[in-house]
Picture 1 (tube, rainbow, N blue to C red):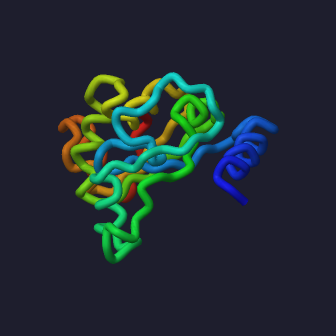
Picture 2: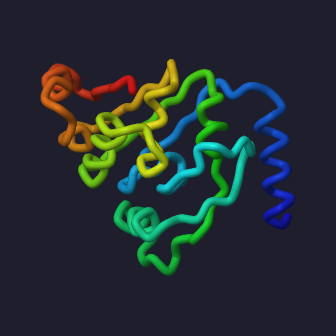
Picture 3: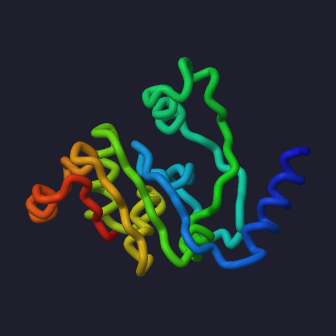
Length: 156
């Protein structure tokens, strides 16, 4: 199947019925589901090809998915941010201290295309599960709330 046919099929499946839950991740560069900054906040497409930036590609190597950056794809098929936001519920899992600054920017910075994960703050049912180290740069009031939780969840 060629890429265009794959995208058409995925789009058809995504629009066939409402999305109950979107399972996503926030990357080291603040990307949400491979929507690297600056992310397209306007497209209504159900899915699209996204270009993976160098930080995102290096993250894949750093996490052990690939041994060398030359093995990491430069493009991926992903749901655009508007499509993700149509889900009834969004669950993000964000492990690793390398993502701590991105988590802080997404949670405490402006909602913007330069921090795609920040858009989760506009969703009424978005929950972000953080490892203690990925939450390490958050403001102290959130740090105090985390101390009593083994796996902190932050509603963005």
